[in-house]
Length: 368
Ligand SMILES: *Cc1c(COP(=O)(O)O)cnc(C)c1O
Ligand code: SF4
Image 1 (cartoon, rainbow, N blue to C red):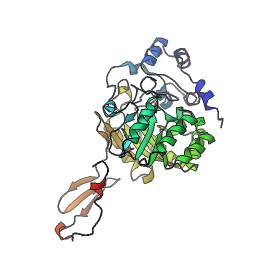
Image 2 (cartoon, helix red, strand yellow):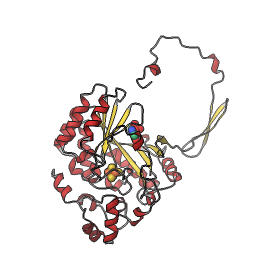
Image 3 (cartoon, helix red, strand yellow):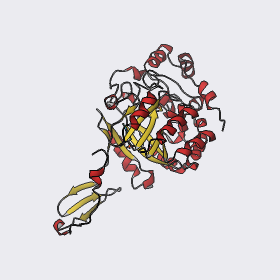
Image 4 (tube, rainbow, N blue to C red):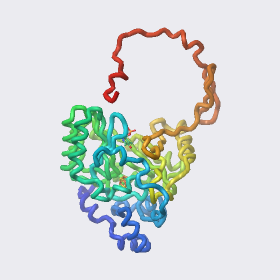
Protein backbone atom coordinates (compact mmCIF):
# COMPACT_ATOMS: atom_id res chain seq x y z
CA UNK A 1 0.00 0.00 0.00
CA UNK A 2 1.32 3.45 -0.85
CA UNK A 3 2.12 5.25 2.37
CA UNK A 4 1.85 8.75 0.95
CA UNK A 5 -1.61 9.64 2.09
CA UNK A 6 -0.85 13.36 2.08
CA UNK A 7 -0.27 13.26 -1.68
CA UNK A 8 -3.56 11.41 -2.20
CA UNK A 9 -5.24 14.11 -0.11
CA UNK A 10 -3.65 16.90 -2.16
CA UNK A 11 -4.90 15.21 -5.32
CA UNK A 12 -8.49 15.14 -4.05
CA UNK A 13 -11.26 16.59 -6.18
CA UNK A 14 -12.26 19.86 -4.55
CA UNK A 15 -12.37 22.76 -6.99
CA UNK A 16 -15.96 23.32 -8.18
CA UNK A 17 -14.74 23.38 -11.81
CA UNK A 18 -13.14 19.96 -11.33
CA UNK A 19 -16.22 18.51 -9.67
CA UNK A 20 -18.63 19.94 -12.26
CA UNK A 21 -16.52 18.63 -15.13
CA UNK A 22 -15.96 15.16 -13.68
CA UNK A 23 -19.62 14.53 -12.84
CA UNK A 24 -21.29 16.63 -15.53
CA UNK A 25 -22.86 19.09 -13.10
CA UNK A 26 -23.85 22.72 -13.31
CA UNK A 27 -20.89 24.79 -12.11
CA UNK A 28 -23.02 27.48 -10.47
CA UNK A 29 -24.87 24.82 -8.51
CA UNK A 30 -21.66 23.19 -7.31
CA UNK A 31 -20.30 26.59 -6.23
CA UNK A 32 -23.47 27.39 -4.33
CA UNK A 33 -23.47 24.07 -2.48
CA UNK A 34 -19.75 24.27 -1.70
CA UNK A 35 -20.31 27.64 -0.03
CA UNK A 36 -22.68 25.97 2.43
CA UNK A 37 -20.77 22.70 2.93
CA UNK A 38 -17.36 21.81 1.60
CA UNK A 39 -17.05 19.46 -1.36
CA UNK A 40 -14.07 17.11 -1.48
CA UNK A 41 -13.58 13.55 -2.72
CA UNK A 42 -10.37 11.52 -2.50
CA UNK A 43 -9.25 10.00 -5.82
CA UNK A 44 -9.46 6.58 -4.14
CA UNK A 45 -13.13 7.03 -3.21
CA UNK A 46 -13.99 8.74 -6.53
CA UNK A 47 -12.76 5.56 -8.25
CA UNK A 48 -15.40 3.51 -6.44
CA UNK A 49 -18.11 5.47 -8.24
CA UNK A 50 -19.40 3.42 -11.16
CA UNK A 51 -22.47 5.37 -12.21
CA UNK A 52 -24.27 8.60 -11.54
CA UNK A 53 -26.49 8.19 -8.50
CA UNK A 54 -24.91 4.95 -7.24
CA UNK A 55 -24.37 4.49 -3.46
CA UNK A 56 -20.85 5.99 -3.55
CA UNK A 57 -21.84 8.89 -5.78
CA UNK A 58 -24.77 9.79 -3.55
CA UNK A 59 -22.61 9.97 -0.43
CA UNK A 60 -20.05 12.46 -1.70
CA UNK A 61 -21.18 14.21 -4.90
CA UNK A 62 -23.15 17.42 -4.31
CA UNK A 63 -26.86 17.33 -5.12
CA UNK A 64 -29.14 20.35 -5.71
CA UNK A 65 -31.46 18.85 -3.05
CA UNK A 66 -28.91 20.05 -0.46
CA UNK A 67 -30.05 23.61 -1.10
CA UNK A 68 -33.58 22.90 0.15
CA UNK A 69 -34.25 24.53 3.47
CA UNK A 70 -36.06 21.84 5.50
CA UNK A 71 -34.18 20.48 8.47
CA UNK A 72 -32.27 22.25 11.21
CA UNK A 73 -28.62 23.19 11.57
CA UNK A 74 -27.99 21.57 14.95
CA UNK A 75 -30.72 18.94 15.32
CA UNK A 76 -29.04 17.24 18.29
CA UNK A 77 -28.59 20.55 20.12
CA UNK A 78 -24.91 19.68 20.54
CA UNK A 79 -24.01 23.33 20.90
CA UNK A 80 -26.14 23.51 24.08
CA UNK A 81 -24.17 20.65 25.65
CA UNK A 82 -20.88 22.21 24.70
CA UNK A 83 -19.13 23.73 27.75
CA UNK A 84 -16.07 24.61 25.63
CA UNK A 85 -16.06 24.64 21.82
CA UNK A 86 -14.27 21.29 21.40
CA UNK A 87 -16.31 19.30 23.93
CA UNK A 88 -19.84 17.88 23.82
CA UNK A 89 -20.70 16.62 27.29
CA UNK A 90 -24.12 15.02 27.18
CA UNK A 91 -23.76 11.74 29.05
CA UNK A 92 -22.66 11.22 32.68
CA UNK A 93 -19.28 9.56 32.13
CA UNK A 94 -18.09 10.31 28.61
CA UNK A 95 -17.48 13.21 26.26
CA UNK A 96 -17.05 13.87 22.57
CA UNK A 97 -13.78 15.68 21.94
CA UNK A 98 -13.79 17.45 18.56
CA UNK A 99 -10.16 17.78 17.52
CA UNK A 100 -10.28 18.31 13.75
CA UNK A 101 -12.61 20.30 11.53
CA UNK A 102 -11.77 18.52 8.31
CA UNK A 103 -12.30 15.17 6.61
CA UNK A 104 -10.73 13.38 3.65
CA UNK A 105 -14.05 13.47 1.78
CA UNK A 106 -17.21 15.23 2.85
CA UNK A 107 -20.36 13.16 3.34
CA UNK A 108 -23.28 15.09 1.96
CA UNK A 109 -25.45 13.80 4.85
CA UNK A 110 -23.07 14.87 7.64
CA UNK A 111 -24.81 15.66 10.94
CA UNK A 112 -22.23 18.29 11.79
CA UNK A 113 -22.52 20.20 8.52
CA UNK A 114 -22.68 23.38 10.56
CA UNK A 115 -19.14 22.84 11.86
CA UNK A 116 -17.25 20.34 9.76
CA UNK A 117 -15.09 21.87 7.03
CA UNK A 118 -15.07 25.28 8.72
CA UNK A 119 -11.77 25.99 10.53
CA UNK A 120 -13.44 28.78 12.53
CA UNK A 121 -15.84 26.31 14.17
CA UNK A 122 -13.41 23.61 15.32
CA UNK A 123 -10.25 25.51 16.11
CA UNK A 124 -6.84 23.91 16.89
CA UNK A 125 -6.47 26.13 19.97
CA UNK A 126 -9.69 24.63 21.30
CA UNK A 127 -7.80 21.36 21.86
CA UNK A 128 -5.99 22.83 24.87
CA UNK A 129 -9.28 24.03 26.33
CA UNK A 130 -10.77 20.58 25.77
CA UNK A 131 -7.88 18.86 27.54
CA UNK A 132 -8.28 21.25 30.50
CA UNK A 133 -12.01 20.55 30.65
CA UNK A 134 -11.44 16.80 30.78
CA UNK A 135 -8.72 17.24 33.42
CA UNK A 136 -11.13 19.21 35.57
CA UNK A 137 -13.97 16.69 35.24
CA UNK A 138 -13.11 13.49 37.11
CA UNK A 139 -16.40 11.90 36.06
CA UNK A 140 -15.14 11.60 32.46
CA UNK A 141 -13.78 8.07 32.07
CA UNK A 142 -14.30 7.68 28.30
CA UNK A 143 -13.20 10.18 25.67
CA UNK A 144 -14.45 9.88 22.11
CA UNK A 145 -12.00 11.68 19.85
CA UNK A 146 -13.97 12.93 16.89
CA UNK A 147 -14.39 15.95 14.60
CA UNK A 148 -14.36 16.09 11.54
CA UNK A 149 -11.91 13.26 11.23
CA UNK A 150 -9.19 13.05 13.90
CA UNK A 151 -6.94 11.14 11.51
CA UNK A 152 -6.68 14.27 9.38
CA UNK A 153 -4.24 15.47 12.02
CA UNK A 154 -0.59 14.60 11.59
CA UNK A 155 0.75 11.62 13.54
CA UNK A 156 2.51 14.08 15.84
CA UNK A 157 -0.57 16.18 16.59
CA UNK A 158 -2.65 13.08 17.19
CA UNK A 159 -0.04 11.56 19.45
CA UNK A 160 0.11 14.79 21.47
CA UNK A 161 -3.63 14.49 22.13
CA UNK A 162 -3.50 10.79 23.01
CA UNK A 163 -0.46 11.32 25.22
CA UNK A 164 -2.07 14.25 27.04
CA UNK A 165 -5.28 12.32 27.64
CA UNK A 166 -3.30 9.36 28.98
CA UNK A 167 -1.75 11.67 31.62
CA UNK A 168 -5.22 12.17 33.09
CA UNK A 169 -5.72 9.41 35.67
CA UNK A 170 -9.54 9.29 35.53
CA UNK A 171 -9.64 8.77 31.74
CA UNK A 172 -9.98 5.00 31.38
CA UNK A 173 -10.71 4.44 27.74
CA UNK A 174 -10.00 6.32 24.56
CA UNK A 175 -11.96 6.02 21.37
CA UNK A 176 -11.27 7.42 17.93
CA UNK A 177 -14.10 7.88 15.42
CA UNK A 178 -12.81 7.98 11.85
CA UNK A 179 -13.90 7.42 8.30
CA UNK A 180 -10.32 7.12 6.98
CA UNK A 181 -10.35 3.33 6.38
CA UNK A 182 -13.27 4.04 4.02
CA UNK A 183 -12.19 7.30 2.35
CA UNK A 184 -8.39 7.13 2.50
CA UNK A 185 -7.16 3.70 3.64
CA UNK A 186 -3.58 4.83 2.86
CA UNK A 187 -3.82 6.92 6.05
CA UNK A 188 -3.59 3.76 8.18
CA UNK A 189 0.18 3.53 7.92
CA UNK A 190 2.38 1.17 9.91
CA UNK A 191 3.84 4.20 11.62
CA UNK A 192 0.42 5.48 12.69
CA UNK A 193 -0.65 2.10 14.02
CA UNK A 194 2.61 1.68 15.95
CA UNK A 195 1.89 4.98 17.66
CA UNK A 196 -1.76 4.23 18.37
CA UNK A 197 -0.97 0.92 20.07
CA UNK A 198 0.90 2.72 22.87
CA UNK A 199 -2.31 4.24 24.19
CA UNK A 200 -4.42 1.19 25.00
CA UNK A 201 -7.18 0.66 25.92
CA UNK A 202 -7.94 2.39 22.64
CA UNK A 203 -11.01 1.62 20.53
CA UNK A 204 -11.55 2.74 16.96
CA UNK A 205 -14.98 3.21 15.44
CA UNK A 206 -15.03 3.31 11.66
CA UNK A 207 -17.82 4.32 9.27
CA UNK A 208 -18.86 2.12 6.35
CA UNK A 209 -22.25 2.43 4.70
CA UNK A 210 -22.07 -0.08 1.86
CA UNK A 211 -20.49 -3.56 1.52
CA UNK A 212 -18.58 -2.53 -1.63
CA UNK A 213 -16.72 0.12 0.40
CA UNK A 214 -14.83 -2.75 2.01
CA UNK A 215 -12.23 -3.01 -0.74
CA UNK A 216 -8.96 -4.97 -0.45
CA UNK A 217 -7.23 -1.69 0.53
CA UNK A 218 -9.81 -0.95 3.23
CA UNK A 219 -9.51 -4.54 4.49
CA UNK A 220 -5.74 -4.14 4.76
CA UNK A 221 -6.11 -0.93 6.76
CA UNK A 222 -8.61 -2.56 9.12
CA UNK A 223 -6.41 -5.61 9.57
CA UNK A 224 -3.50 -3.38 10.55
CA UNK A 225 -5.59 -1.76 13.24
CA UNK A 226 -6.94 -5.09 14.48
CA UNK A 227 -3.44 -6.60 14.52
CA UNK A 228 -2.42 -3.78 16.87
CA UNK A 229 -5.02 -5.06 19.32
CA UNK A 230 -7.44 -2.22 18.63
CA UNK A 231 -11.06 -3.36 18.94
CA UNK A 232 -12.94 -2.08 15.90
CA UNK A 233 -16.58 -1.05 15.76
CA UNK A 234 -18.60 0.33 12.87
CA UNK A 235 -21.21 3.05 12.67
CA UNK A 236 -23.50 3.11 9.65
CA UNK A 237 -25.97 5.79 8.68
CA UNK A 238 -29.20 4.54 7.16
CA UNK A 239 -29.43 6.44 3.86
CA UNK A 240 -32.00 6.46 1.11
CA UNK A 241 -30.57 5.16 -2.14
CA UNK A 242 -27.40 3.95 -0.43
CA UNK A 243 -28.21 1.19 2.01
CA UNK A 244 -31.96 1.30 2.71
CA UNK A 245 -32.29 -2.35 1.82
CA UNK A 246 -32.25 -5.34 4.20
CA UNK A 247 -30.07 -7.48 1.93
CA UNK A 248 -27.45 -4.78 1.37
CA UNK A 249 -27.32 -4.10 5.12
CA UNK A 250 -27.00 -7.77 5.99
CA UNK A 251 -24.20 -8.15 3.48
CA UNK A 252 -22.46 -5.07 4.94
CA UNK A 253 -22.67 -6.35 8.52
CA UNK A 254 -21.42 -9.83 7.55
CA UNK A 255 -18.57 -8.43 5.50
CA UNK A 256 -17.51 -6.17 8.40
CA UNK A 257 -17.16 -9.22 10.63
CA UNK A 258 -14.82 -10.87 8.12
CA UNK A 259 -12.44 -7.92 8.55
CA UNK A 260 -12.75 -8.06 12.36
CA UNK A 261 -15.08 -5.08 12.69
CA UNK A 262 -18.02 -5.44 15.04
CA UNK A 263 -21.14 -3.56 13.86
CA UNK A 264 -21.99 -1.08 16.63
CA UNK A 265 -24.70 1.36 15.51
CA UNK A 266 -27.04 1.93 12.61
CA UNK A 267 -28.17 5.55 12.84
CA UNK A 268 -31.48 6.85 11.68
CA UNK A 269 -30.51 9.90 9.55
CA UNK A 270 -30.75 13.07 11.62
CA UNK A 271 -33.02 15.93 10.63
CA UNK A 272 -30.13 18.07 9.38
CA UNK A 273 -30.70 20.99 7.06
CA UNK A 274 -29.89 20.04 3.47
CA UNK A 275 -30.03 16.26 3.97
CA UNK A 276 -33.74 15.53 3.78
CA UNK A 277 -33.32 13.58 0.52
CA UNK A 278 -31.33 10.96 2.47
CA UNK A 279 -33.91 10.28 5.15
CA UNK A 280 -35.88 7.06 5.31
CA UNK A 281 -38.88 6.08 7.40
CA UNK A 282 -38.24 4.54 10.82
CA UNK A 283 -40.11 1.45 9.56
CA UNK A 284 -37.33 0.88 7.00
CA UNK A 285 -34.81 0.64 9.85
CA UNK A 286 -37.05 -1.76 11.75
CA UNK A 287 -37.41 -3.91 8.64
CA UNK A 288 -33.61 -4.05 8.41
CA UNK A 289 -33.27 -5.03 12.07
CA UNK A 290 -35.86 -7.78 11.55
CA UNK A 291 -33.80 -9.06 8.62
CA UNK A 292 -30.69 -9.28 10.81
CA UNK A 293 -31.68 -10.68 14.22
CA UNK A 294 -31.96 -14.45 14.06
CA UNK A 295 -31.25 -14.68 10.33
CA UNK A 296 -27.52 -14.12 10.78
CA UNK A 297 -24.85 -14.14 13.54
CA UNK A 298 -25.75 -12.12 16.61
CA UNK A 299 -22.32 -10.50 16.21
CA UNK A 300 -23.56 -8.97 12.96
CA UNK A 301 -26.48 -7.22 14.64
CA UNK A 302 -25.81 -3.61 15.72
CA UNK A 303 -28.15 -1.34 17.64
CA UNK A 304 -30.49 0.75 15.53
CA UNK A 305 -30.61 4.17 17.20
CA UNK A 306 -32.17 7.53 16.68
CA UNK A 307 -30.28 10.48 18.09
CA UNK A 308 -33.14 12.30 19.77
CA UNK A 309 -33.84 15.71 18.26
CA UNK A 310 -33.11 18.43 20.78
CA UNK A 311 -30.32 16.54 22.51
CA UNK A 312 -31.84 13.58 24.33
CA UNK A 313 -29.05 11.25 23.28
CA UNK A 314 -29.22 7.99 21.38
CA UNK A 315 -32.39 6.00 21.78
CA UNK A 316 -32.45 2.34 20.64
CA UNK A 317 -35.34 1.32 18.41
CA UNK A 318 -36.31 -2.35 18.49
CA UNK A 319 -38.81 -4.50 16.67
CA UNK A 320 -41.60 -5.54 19.03
CA UNK A 321 -40.53 -8.97 20.28
CA UNK A 322 -42.40 -8.70 23.59
CA UNK A 323 -46.08 -8.81 22.67
CA UNK A 324 -47.73 -8.98 26.08
CA UNK A 325 -46.71 -9.00 29.75
CA UNK A 326 -49.21 -10.05 32.43
CA UNK A 327 -48.81 -11.34 36.01
CA UNK A 328 -48.93 -14.90 34.64
CA UNK A 329 -47.05 -14.85 31.39
CA UNK A 330 -44.96 -13.09 28.83
CA UNK A 331 -45.95 -13.52 25.20
CA UNK A 332 -42.96 -13.38 22.90
CA UNK A 333 -42.45 -13.42 19.17
CA UNK A 334 -39.32 -14.91 17.59
CA UNK A 335 -37.51 -13.80 14.43
CA UNK A 336 -39.71 -16.05 12.28
CA UNK A 337 -42.91 -14.58 13.65
CA UNK A 338 -43.81 -17.58 15.82
CA UNK A 339 -45.31 -16.95 19.23
CA UNK A 340 -43.98 -18.36 22.52
CA UNK A 341 -45.17 -18.09 26.10
CA UNK A 342 -42.84 -17.77 29.07
CA UNK A 343 -44.50 -18.30 32.49
CA UNK A 344 -43.93 -15.50 35.01
CA UNK A 345 -42.61 -16.06 38.53
CA UNK A 346 -45.64 -16.73 40.79
CA UNK A 347 -44.87 -15.26 44.21
CA UNK A 348 -42.40 -12.45 43.95
CA UNK A 349 -42.57 -11.88 47.75
CA UNK A 350 -41.06 -15.28 48.59
CA UNK A 351 -37.62 -14.40 47.33
CA UNK A 352 -35.51 -14.07 50.49
CA UNK A 353 -33.82 -10.76 50.94
CA UNK A 354 -30.08 -11.16 50.71
CA UNK A 355 -28.33 -9.31 53.52
CA UNK A 356 -24.71 -9.10 52.51
CA UNK A 357 -22.89 -5.94 53.44
CA UNK A 358 -21.73 -4.51 50.18
CA UNK A 359 -20.67 -1.26 48.66
CA UNK A 360 -23.62 0.70 47.41
CA UNK A 361 -22.46 0.96 43.82
CA UNK A 362 -25.10 3.46 42.79
CA UNK A 363 -24.34 5.86 45.63
CA UNK A 364 -20.66 5.76 44.80
CA UNK A 365 -20.97 6.61 41.16
CA UNK A 366 -18.98 9.81 40.71
CA UNK A 367 -21.75 11.71 38.99
CA UNK A 368 -24.24 11.18 41.82
C1 LIG B 1 -22.75 9.09 20.57
C2 LIG B 1 -22.27 9.98 21.61
C3 LIG B 1 -21.47 9.50 22.65
C4 LIG B 1 -21.05 8.04 22.76
O1 LIG B 1 -22.15 7.24 22.98
P1 LIG B 1 -21.97 5.67 23.19
O2 LIG B 1 -23.37 5.16 23.18
O3 LIG B 1 -21.27 5.48 24.49
O4 LIG B 1 -21.15 5.15 22.05
C5 LIG B 1 -21.06 10.38 23.61
N1 LIG B 1 -21.42 11.68 23.57
C6 LIG B 1 -22.20 12.17 22.59
C7 LIG B 1 -22.58 13.61 22.60
C8 LIG B 1 -22.65 11.34 21.57
O5 LIG B 1 -23.41 11.83 20.58
S1 SF4 C 1 -16.51 11.67 7.74
FE1 SF4 C 1 -17.93 12.03 9.46
S2 SF4 C 1 -17.55 14.17 10.11
FE2 SF4 C 1 -16.62 13.90 8.06
S3 SF4 C 1 -18.20 14.59 6.63
FE3 SF4 C 1 -18.45 12.36 6.86
S4 SF4 C 1 -19.97 12.13 8.51
FE4 SF4 C 1 -19.21 14.26 8.62
